[in-house]
Image 1 (tube, protein in one colour):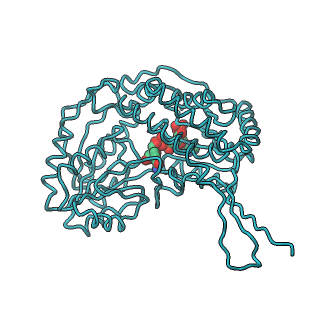
Image 2 (spheres, rainbow, N blue to C red; image 1 turned 120 degrees about the vertical axis):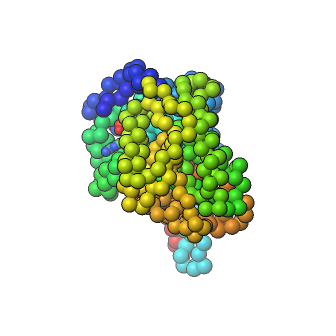
Length: 460
Ligand code: NAP
């Protein structure tokens, strides 16, 4: 499929975009490589001036930026505004902290003959990012913020359904004073993605997306002996223990399942409640779903926008049908959603057995899988019975105990009394089939730097 803006609220295609030609792509790589040679020599203060200015522009013109994801992938406008602010805060975070994170580290040694040893962090070159549509700016900020500050340059193939958001981010960096080639957006095809990964000028690959895209891109990178990071899908468990504050748990579970119309990698896709409070929780959670108001994502009264595209909505509906065919029970609490537009009816699936083919699938939208657990041990067992390992959460009033339960969950991130979320200083990443490597926090800036040892021996 080509690059196009199709409004999922109306399903009308508003604009199509020409893919990049092979020659133009080669030229873009050439420019990126050339820019890297000078960008790498800039001081942290010089790079900070550009990255910090990009954050200021995002904030000053937040409404202009926020309009595009709402138009292209149906995100509630208020959530688009929040995302613009989050992207700005990530850029600021790395602008302010990169120098400290990448400061040379002295290696302590007791041995007088070992000389002085220090580890420095060198940038490695042109990085290639392949990014998803669900957070069109946040994803780009996670890649560009740390890596531009580290002295790398970045080329991005964004998802084909958000071409205007992708171009806006490239313009942002030019307006902020970045040289041409420091941040490049390319409307590349899958074949061109393979070629870019094979190109010797590209030194690392960062993909956020589905397992299929991840395994294809990582395989190419592996053949070329290039480092990759993979931020893939998830099926996060939200565990509610018997002593949990139910008001808080229900309110946050609704947010965890429904923010971004449920299309978040760390959405609370599986809700696991211990038997004692399961009925009450399910009742209140259903009531919350019934209150959703489907409509235009630009309308401030809307709480249930369409999904990102009609095909995403059809895929999710098909998954729900498959679940029911194989014995799951469905609860449909609210009014029917509009027939026009990429809307999906919010639903809860219960009695999803282990042999149901959907048991280990990612539900990317407003549909929750609900499990009853006899006790805490069973809740943990169900949570870990997943091929994914991204995030998760535990609700209990005994927070110390919650942290102990968190240690038993096999994922990259666990939150106590809050669904998984994200902040610039919190490391983000998964284990198992949710990928490898981390973004955000200090860890995120260390992924694509060369940790170089310099060992100076005395001459006498
Ligand atoms: P996707 O289909 O994998 O697309 C992601 C990106 O990869 C897009 O730019 C896409 O391009 C490209 N792509 C797809 N197949 C490819 C291939 N074979 N070779 C090269 N590039 C390829 O994923 P999505 O449906 O857009 O995004 C949702 C997924 O991302 C979910 O599984 C979600 O959980 C995951 N996600 C993970 C994180 C995280 O941090 N762990 C964050 C956000 C989302 P086209 O658009 O042109 O197809």
